[in-house]
Amino acid sequence: MAVTIYDVAKRAGVGIGTVSRAMNDNPGINPATKARVLGVVKKLNYQPHTLAQSLARKKTFSIAAVVPFFTNYFFIELLKSITAFLSRNNYNLILYNVDTHYKWERTLDRVLADRSTDGILVISIGVSDEYADRLLANTVPAVIVDNLNYKIDSVAVANRQGAREATEHLIKLGHKKVGMIDGHLSSFPAISRLQGYKQALLENDLPFDDELLVICDAKIGEHGFNEIAGYKAMKEVLQLGSKMPTALFVASDVQALGVMRAVKEAGLHIPDDLAIVGFDDIEFSRFIGLTTMRQPFGKMGRLGVERLFDLMNGKADAGFHKELKAELIVRESCGGEKSFSAGTDCECKKY
Image 1 (tube, helix red, strand yellow):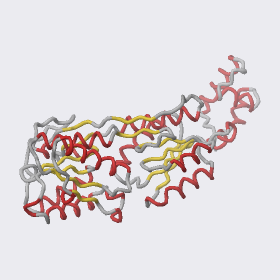
Image 2 (image 1 turned 180 degrees about the vertical axis):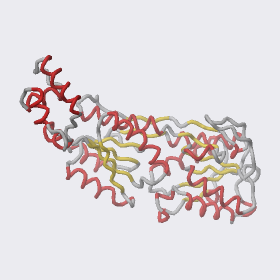
Image 3 (image 1 turned 30 degrees about the horizontal axis):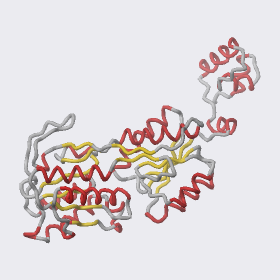
Image 4 (image 1 turned 120 degrees about the horizontal axis):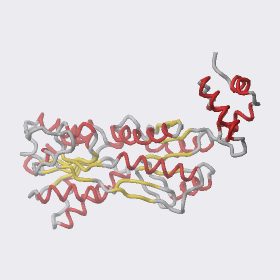
């Protein structure tokens, strides 16, 4: 039978109120009494009921994360750092999956109405200024992760800058026909990365050719940021024949995986026939030799949830908007000088 607060109180010779004050570090309790109560708590291995604690403190000890599609590699990596922080602080994470781009407002409305969490992380969702006002008017604090809105505290990677650097790397390797495979433009990262790609072309006096740009179909799922979408997009590129680009910037690593499969099926080789740079540097990227822009997943998730805790505890200053720099990781797929990430020691090879 589970130990109760009454068992602790009886063994320590105090009332249940004193046990509660001792466990909640109330400054009004006698130090000797507190030590005696905590000793009994430890000896009996008493675990207070989370719901009872939350009712007493008017806290739920839970955080809501509204995520468009949390089966994607990107979100798994991001959520690792968030859950690690929450675990250290004895908080639970409640995931709300938005299976289509158009349902996020309805989902957020439900989270706000339920009032079952102490804070909300809005992940990879473009929040309008109008909806930002609704979030600000709510008593539950919110932070946006992997997107930006200057009314709401937010943290994201510098997508445009990263895409520009990825494209420029291919140009510096001598490529004059650099194409792009992007996610659907209903996605904030897809829009920003397209802007960065175009900026790199412009700054290097190369024309933008819309034939060399393939926008993935959102109906495939995950705004087109998946392997199947990348595979189908590469099939379109292959149809260009002699007009094909010699290099491709692919807006995500998981799309690049599909791209590489389509290239192999066509009997072509990477990087000899097609150089490729991706974006993310998720776990499998180093094993397939993919040159990519490394996102600081851990830092982005940690900063977002730390900021949320500051808001929840009334410690936040006004305005918090961070854009984190992506890092170019050079591997075999671009044909450039190799600079492997930790643990990667494979030799160059054709794909």
